[in-house]
Image (cartoon, rainbow over all chains, first blue to last red; front, side):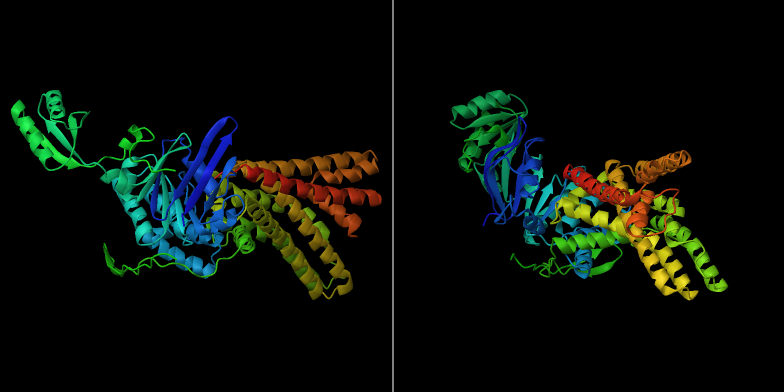
Length: 307
Length: 303
């Protein structure tokens, strides 16, 4: 059963269309929701939580209708907002216990789950201190903990790496991956950064201007049509021309040439071409398509499997 | 449901020796419904209005005010018991009226503490993404502040009542007076909590909310006193009677004296049966309007 299923889901605010005729199935696992700011990610999340009525179309979450079963959805789903949402004058433990109770857990269960969850997100002794004194990374962990404390079947994370330094970003991404694998909780993580989602997601849904751009598995996107990146000391253009003559697909990306890898003989072709030009070969490495390219490829391109 | 948590590793933390990580455990216990969640929010908010379960700093003001409003009652009770007076020095209904400033300051402090924080720091997002509906939040917060404010008035009234019983005053006379004043305290709490929460919910800055509530309540009390005094002086009895509508305390006192049969403590009470009905209607109207305004305010809160 898909975690989230939308059919021609549309949301208009006056003349502005935030989400337009969106039909997508989000399967269990870690799924990335990618789009630039204003693409409709947050609007979609609010509709999925049953907090914003759709203008038209319909959506179900865990098989429950967002229009009529919002409360039941919110009992089974966790949500981590993008913005700050933590009161500074309470400790992480106090806040998370309170939020567990607000999700319907009895007092004793709320305490026990809070201790477990804070440990899982990596908050130890500091959990008894006021949140006001926390670093951004710690605050993000508290926000994540309150979304997980009631053991949801699905968590919606809105830009969870916002404001984090590179190390904090890695920690958060690792944690997201663990939620999907070890904890067995499905994750929908919204971000405008493709690179980081590529590392943790099984599947990505790309939306732009409220419309579905594509929905495909990360493996499809990154494993398809391998490339070799070639960098030479000079005469890059001449090398590109020579390789094209040899019948290879070549794209110039900055100082690099990306050459379609057909089989192992491609390496030899490149080597021979470089030798003939008499230039220095700085690097020749195998790489996969980056997810960033799916933005450059128009809709209807070869990796699309969206409905 | 989902895959069981299988990894059982031992993680070494700096300076903490070995912690055995049991892995993630799923929760399959009970999940309470909206009603129980609303009750939990009510209980925590009502306790929070006395700083219980909060920092020491947030206990100071409410407990100081509780002491301030109980102290005179204690003295009256002791005097009554020791001197074996034939009636209480002062009466129940007048007591709250005389100490209304303490109640005002309490509401002004606790209404913003109850709701401003959740709005200002956008904690509402965390509430709204849970099974609770907006109306449940409003009901819990309104009920909690009403209960806390009621307790602030009911405690000294009960001290007076116990004092009266210890002084062996006739129970048949004391009980109706006491119950009337308790009813009045409840209505006063309902009106004050409504006004306080509406103001607090539109002023997310806590300090501003405190000042705004004090100002509104003090101005209402001042206008009521002045208008009633002047009208009384000019022998405009009907007008003087209706002047009680201006302030929450005299409004509820009007209901107590005309409909519940308490002794009137003001220069002029509500005129006749019609006056009583008008006062009662205004109480209901104010409470309904405040509740409605809160619902409208919270409908506009987005996650």
